[in-house]
Image 1 (cartoon, rainbow, N blue to C red):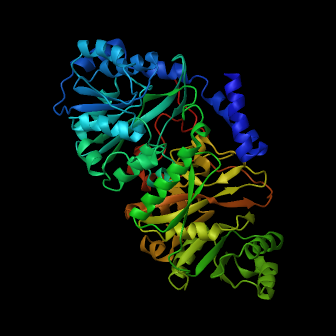
Image 2: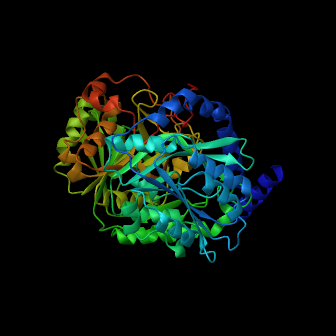
Image 3: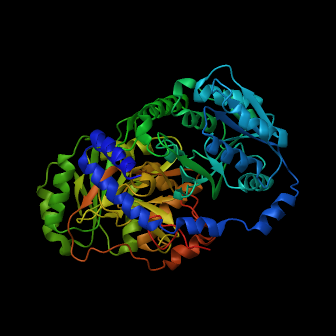
Amino acid sequence: MKSDYAKRGYHYARNYGVGKLYFKARERLERNSLEKDYQDWLFAGRPSLREKELQRGHHFSYSPLISVVVPLYRTPEMFLREMIESVLGQTYGNLELCLADGSGDDSLESVLSGYMNQDSRIRYRRLPENLGISGNTNEALRMATGEYVAMLDHDDVLEEHALFEVAELLQNRPELDLIYTDEDKLSADSGTFFQPHFKPDYNPDLLRSNNYICHFLVVRRELAERVGGFRENFDGAQDYDFILRCVEKTEAIGHIPQILYHWRCSEGSTASDPGNKSYAAEAGKRALEAHLKCIGEDARVDCLDNPGFYRIHYTLVSVPKVCIVILGAPDIGKLKKFLKVISKRRTYTNFEMLMLLDMPKKNKAVLNFIKEYRQIPIKVVYCTGARNKSLTFTSLAEKLESEYLLFLDSRIATVSADYMELLLGNVQRKGIGAAGGRVYDSNLRLRYGARVIGLNGQAGVAFEGLKAGYTGYFHKAVLQQNYHAVSGQAMMVSRELFLKVGGFSEDVEERMRDVDLCLKLERLGLRNVYEPGAIFILQKCRGDRRQSIRPAMQFARKWKEFLKEPDGYYNPNLLLKDTDFRIGEIY
């Protein structure tokens, strides 16, 4: 195992540099410490023998046949047996196991014949030649007769109750076309379960950053056939390409937040090291580009440092005027730094600035400086108190010429070069409300970004405190994705939508007005986007502290019904008292 880690480390350092390898190794060690009790957690959460017996005897009013399709290719006997037994041992019995064998010889047939003699639910076909992963899978799909097909790799393993949970979900949601579950990894000797992936509910922008859906995947057979199955020119990322084509055809997508699939980490597998199949990352990029073209999105796809992860640069539809709203009343020193960095990073030039200040007597020096400042036009509006500030700006927004509003913390000292284009590219997309970047404090710890409902109170910041250079749980701190809300310290929204929802509400606490605004946008059927490519760093400030976790009672009353439900963009198996996506308590 140590030599395997060394090989993987060498491969990563060669491609991305020693510095990034250091961050990756340190972050993995820290993540391992958060997951050290995971195996106990998994075992404790499994159904008891009594519960499994009750499942086997349970009668569902809707009991669809589920075809488990598996492409075989010279599968090691131990892995083959474990896979087959994990399917035949399911507590939901209305299934068939469809096996397409591309091994090119009879090496697996002798093992399979014993199982076929014992269980008539096995459908087996020996292919005349290996057709590749996509071709073999398509042959298994052709054998399927079930209403739903479930995708399983030839050396992976299902939990005994996996299909029962799928059938149970379908009782209340029979319209679902695609279902996926949480998953983890399984050591080659089957002795250790590790790296649990607790996924969010369907998250379109996260899916465009990475194939987070992956396993366990169950699809209505009619949909699988309609999209044409798997395409061999995307081998290595054939699952990603297949899923992207499925979501082009349906929005009836369900998620079961349980670990029901174990992804085998054997030598040379993608689960063990994505670098072992570097061509897969390129195939994934091509699949994503094809998907974006199909749905009419003009964009560029870039590969991130970790194979299989991507960032999309959406092409600007137009070059509208943006109003940068400076939040807070900075002293002259901080204001000068703020204006200097905005001027220096001015790759996008069609913008103006707006600053809301208390009465002139308190800000004489700032006003005198602004009068002399000529590089960027700055409008100044006076108001008193947080409530009046929100009301003043909301009414003022009606008179602005700018089509988009960018709210920025006045303490910002560093910005990424293309922050404006990245945020604007997102909010110009159809169906998008607000877009927010990631903001680090002067100690290079993540301070503002995506907001998770219920985290650390009512709406904590995901990965708050994460060191710069670290990418977080499954790299989610640096991936474009949807959240219910983003931080108002670096947030863009169209002026039209801002006014349509009534701007900032005066009936909630000031620190929650960004979240309130985002939730009002969601009510219109819009999605909010976390855009971590837009990076900001704050100046050092006296008394700089983490977000308050005091309850916001006005916000809680207004969104009482919404707050009762768990955040679907998070996962119920993760703790709400920590921001690092830590696994929950053993139950």
